[in-house]
Length: 603
Image 1: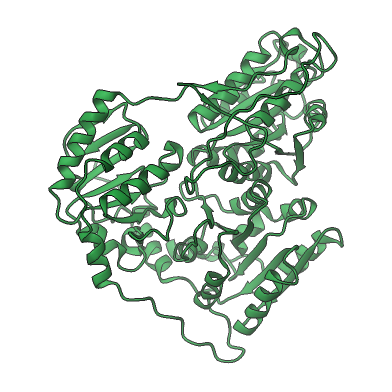
Image 2: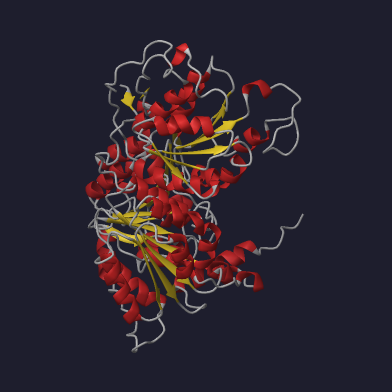
């Protein structure tokens, strides 16, 4: 059976798969068909309509002479809004954040000088399995195949440099330099991004967007993408082997990983938890994909820096099922997890491996988890063990009046701010570890970029996420070092009228790097961060800033941000000691440092 992909009215797609990319339903566009060969039957209009059909209502970008005509056609589309960013890197990060909330994102930049600038953000989206359409305004079609040297290039008559760079970080590349195959190339690129859940690259010659062509004379028909199917025999064999493996275990557990998002298996994972009675944990990069109010939820499994009592339950289990894990050096805390392969069932988006034994291919994760839940005996032993050993968390020591604010006190107050109407964005750094300990209420969003870990990601991602999920108030936690990389697009947030709350944690440097390997390069020039944001604000838009140095000022700032300034962008600079870090970062940093500094193996 075919599955429809893409819709115009997808701002709040109906789905209950927490943390997963929404599956949006196609609708038929009822606008009258454009007359054959009319001035409107152009490449630019077709691309704009396609973006709207798949759920993109905001495109992030930076204008440049090669994409200006294309931008004219994009902004002429009634359902499409162009969001001009301060630089291409942030436009890519914004498209990344948008895709996390909406299911697909798009950015548009100019040739090479813009394309290579956005490349880092596209690589990050690739690492996180996000459908992202990167559109580049390319050279005039007449310049291809000539010996001409163009501006915005490295001065060689070879226009393929940008394309070659994108080939490693996108799943499909389309270079549109004639109208005959433009329709096919554009449609293939967009549909491939949706099918593969990866970024794609589309380059469009600057002289083509406004030229009518017969291939664009009809309204584009909404995409129909056939779903991938499990091999029925493989599925049955995998379920049988896994059920036998788990049903003989005494205290099995299940752990959710980040690839549940691309597998669209979050609902199936929760159904498995309901049916099995097993204790449920998540890997750090899967936080937000499993509802934390679930009665079997025991926290984040992150080896030595797991939430309290979670690692003890997972690592002492005699069987554990990992759904969509990524075991990199960061998630494994420098390869120090106390797991054994012979106890594990590893479920990837289309493959299942049971212990040291058989592997089953062509088996989709969501099908496998749904079928497995029907074959498992109910076994709450691990849950009962967790409740038996669990000791409620303590509270930070009470602050003396006007005492310098501590990070643990900050996040105790942050916890009370969260609700189903909020979403948390955590920047690379100590915010990773502090935000992992937050207990997410039902419906509260959560995003961070762990696999790629690019500092500065959160500014653009916050912009994009807030633009896509306007019903939520985004709360972002950004370190001062990360903020200095991408600070400019606070300007774009104000221009868009966003009401995000940004906590700028000012501890004077790259604290996460300090805990891995310290040096003078980790100390940065201190800025007047609130003064910078005030200057960017410049009296245009709704903005409120404040500096916080103690608990009393924090309480007052949160009250103002959530009440009298609830419709404004609120920027709260929190000044803390340079060595005030979470205990988890201290442990994690030492283990990652040990992994990084391993001597070469003997040759």
